[in-house]
Image (cartoon, rainbow, N blue to C red; front, side, top):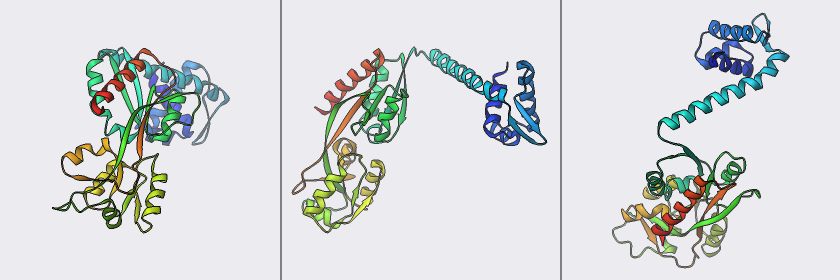
Length: 293
């Protein structure tokens, strides 16, 4: 039985239309018909009812569909595992990570971890913080790194890092000594909601102390930083995500005055703890301690 015939059958069952199947698979329509016919001959059943140019799954076709999906899934899983083995991996770790973490603290830590554990294949899924708990709960990822506590009760969660949140502004003045919290918050738009946790309470505090401010929502930190560099606004961001930009004088840190700085937390989520997971979490804790102690 040819695996391509099964894949053709699965797509054909999805559309119940051989023309659309041929377009998705980049095959000719006669080739699709041939694949289905060969499969029917081997199984000795009719998979589709044909009425003129229209086709529809038979009861036998519906029954076989689940088997076809299982066979192709096992086939692709086997190929992936064999490819990993060829590359020297014998263990796998899937990490679901929030964008703010993936673009700041994770890369150098991940590089060192992979150097130290060359037999572990690491796969990264970048998701929004509120999606990561569900990913871990469903078993689609082994470890989650998120900025918010999960709602799911069947997973483990604990804080691995606390990050102070600071007010940052564009470095567009020769003399920045006169820039205060009040002057920048009243001069610039405040770019908000680029972090999933602290903005609602923080914005309430800002508006209570500075009632006349202008805001702009931007839901990604990398975009926020770029906007600040171009003078489009200021924002409160975790220290670790703006550390490089401040050192390169692209952004400047504004000393807090009336606004109590927020804290950004990094949570690690797990459902079970395999050797690979324990190895990564212990490495992560040690690396964070060294870098930010």
